[in-house]
Amino acid sequence: EVQLVESGGDLVQPGGSLRLSCTASGFTFDYHSMHWVRQAPGKGLEWVSGLTWDSRSSAYADSVKGRFSISRDNDKKSLYLQMNSLRPEDTALYYCVKELDPYSYYAVLDFWGQGTLVTVSS
Amino acid sequence: SYVLTQPPSVSVALGETATITCGGNRIATKSVHWYQQKPGQAPVVVIYYDRDRPSGIPERISGSSSGDTATLTISGVEAGDEADYYCQVRDTSAEHVVFGGGTKLTVL
Image (spheres, rainbow over the protein chains, first blue to last red):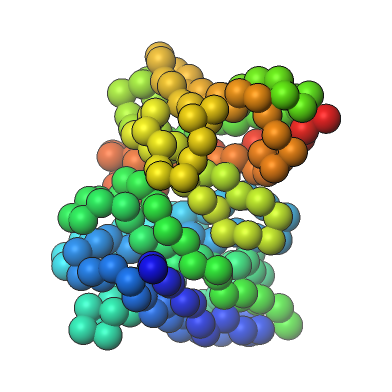
């Protein structure tokens, strides 16, 4: 059974930093690209960042470029999101998401974790 | 950047057919994926690559794409279909994932 468990969400002041983690199980983690997708309260889905299976290519939404950094450790079956210079508009539930096909790139997001809540407020 | 446009809401009577559209420039040249999100739950993919259904998704849920519009069709709508639906594509020019704004399906 595929499982994605996010952690690291918290209340942080504007300008602060947080590191989100996602631990995967139930599939061959190092075959699949992974993503972070967020959802502000009462709003729609917003893709944040993606990283290929081999960490050779990453991409970021314009809204977070230069402030967030995605990484992974295939030995630990874990995905990370380092978030710096946080803003109130970054407040959202952050989902860790797996791609459907091995070695695919920004295609079908077939399994989502339950999310970790980040609140940016003074 | 590539933009996907969805109607904010669609209402349909129980047992009827719901049609949810997703507009984008030449969207038919892209692969479109659809997600269902019920309140308090994570999204679930219901259609991928325009018209394929994951295992466990009923045949009454289908997808199509032509020109500038992709369509998610739900036949014989049930109360349990009430949810938010999002379309998604890959923006190859920017190597981004793009979501539509979402459509809230209300079953009357």
